[in-house]
Image (cartoon, rainbow, N blue to C red; front, side, top):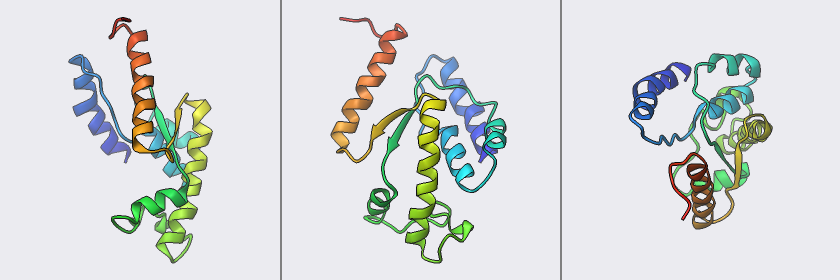
Length: 151
């Protein structure tokens, strides 16, 4: 994962930033931190592994219970092997394993809220409500940085 991320950073993110674009990235290094630590990898080691990553201006954490997340996934498909933590042998049942593993992942994200100044958004709200909060926070940051003038 770190090699794939490094490649994306070098070939996509950094060139776009140098060209003056605003870059939005889904699942930045914090996802690796949460998932790897949930797999019992040492948190300091994981953070050091991704030490080359650029610190983002903003990070949104969409907080949702593992049960709600599972319900949403199951509307279209069953949980995938690794997203369910099946490699950890938490349960032979992929649905039970998903809930156990995602509870671990969620716990790691909650720990990172203060550590990395993540902006927590209640993901149980409707899509429209999440969109409003996201847009408000991004606009505030863009105004602070002088990208948008106050009208």
